[in-house]
Image (cartoon, rainbow, N blue to C red; front, side, top):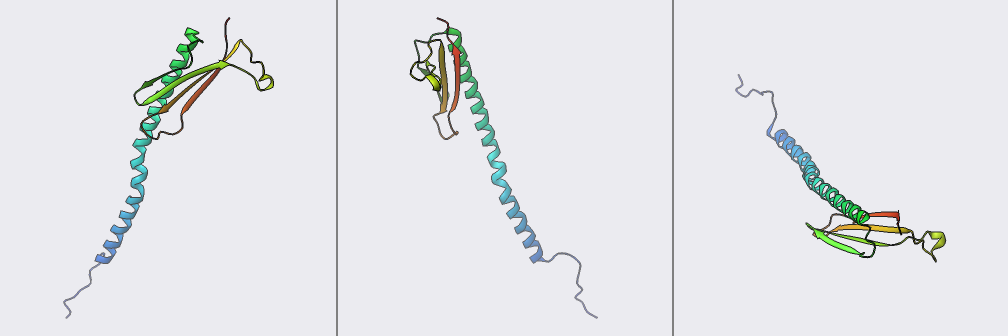
Length: 128
C-alpha cells in the first residue's frame, strides 16, 4: 500500500505564477488611478481660474475704463492680465474702427505645469 496520495489542488508553482500575474495587473492599473485625483485637481483649478478671469473681464466691461489697460494681478498661484486695443478686421487693418474694442484676458499658472494659459477674447461696441 502506498502512503503518498496525490490531492487535488494548486501546486506552489501555480500559486506563485498567479500572484505574479495579479501583481503585474495591479501594477499596470495603479498609475491610471493614482493620476486621476491630480487631473481632477488641475481641472478644478483651471475652472476656478477661468471663472476669476471671466469676472475680471465682466468688471472691466461694467466700468468701461478703457484708458487704464493693460491691467494685471495675482490670485493664489495664478497670474491674470487684461489687455485691449481698437479692433481692426483683416480687411481694414490700416484703419481700425474707433467704436469696436478688442478686450483680451489671459490667466496662467505660475507654480508649475498646468497646461496652456487660458485666454478669453471679446470684441465689444464702445460707447463714445
